[in-house]
Image (cartoon, rainbow, N blue to C red; front, side, top):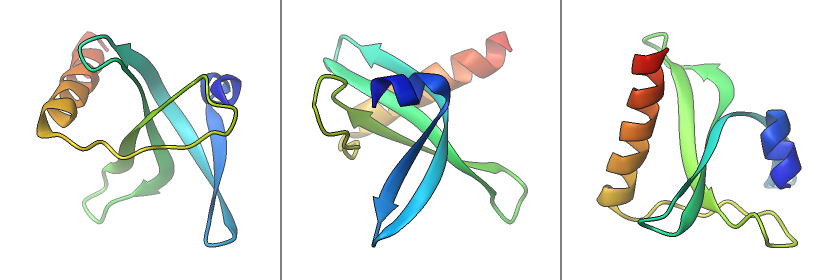
Length: 89
């Protein structure tokens, strides 16, 4: 699945329905020893912002699985990474 993430899109099955997502970025954080993916389903909020999501994953697992981000510290780090990319445009 790592190659699919790097290609820019992946599919997850939720309630027997395939849903396609677009990868925005992947990165590794050594502080948490985790790999992260930031992605979108290409939908927009009522205010016109692109809906984006983030999860952690293990690129070495034989079965691809997104795992929830559990701590505020991890979310803050993800926000910093995203803000840094936007700032460097």
